[in-house]
Length: 416
Image (tube, rainbow, N blue to C red; front, side):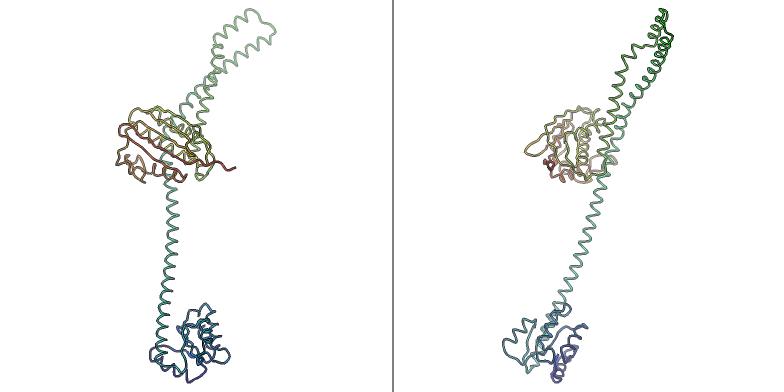
């Protein structure tokens, strides 16, 4: 950019032979239009030009996002320090004094274009890296969501596998009370029919207005024949037994419903002792044929937790304890409060766990059960649930003596 034709011809002659493409401008407005059109890598700018001087053109270029990174060589006949400082502050990269030296202009042009090339390479490389980082981040986020979804699916599959294991026992538990409720209700129906007939006959006697001795004898004989005394004595017991059976069914169904709820992210204040009692109620049939159950409940405060997921942990640990006992043994459940932590210990008198298995027992998909009998996810999911509660799940075992699984969770009081 120069308003003197002689300077433009001279610079063009020197630079074209080096293989550079040249754009010429004789004033600031023309120069700005050509830079805006794109494709410019270096600007050689004269200070003294009509209309807009070199300082103004430089300021316009540096203010524009598209052209601010283009290096500028300012050509000047001015040698004063203030002009050069003004140019440097305005964004000029280098100065050449008039008269222009061919070697100097070629050297400085080459150097600045090389710097520009490096800067463009770094810029493009950084943009490429940023794009790859964005793509990688998006891939990781997608992978995380997939993993999270898979984890939830595995959690649900493990829960359903556990429910499937318990269904036969639960059906047996439900059938027993249903059986004697049905039997009792059948007896109550017969008793009711007899009592209705007896009361009808009494009503008929009373309606006639007199009770002769013979009639009294007949009613007494009828009362003995219908076993009314036995019915009246047995009636309350049958009703109480039926009520107890119905309550047992209600509790089993309620505990199972609580365990199989789908809103598994719900946090609420809960009683850990009650959570353990519900778990024991659900697995009662799985345990009763193998082990005596001893419970030692300490006095515990309510704590904020996911009671459904903790119930899943306790059910899994109780089933494992029962499966570790080959014929007959004992399972002890103990809870206590210590230094703001609730500790739960589930101890069995089973066969114990060898050292080499203890190291891998919490690994996902590790199982010692037969194919089709377990997913290998139970204890891994249990540890994950306890970790998400800020707690810890550990075990101690001795071959031939049994195993103890210990759960510790911090007490989180209910918000005021």
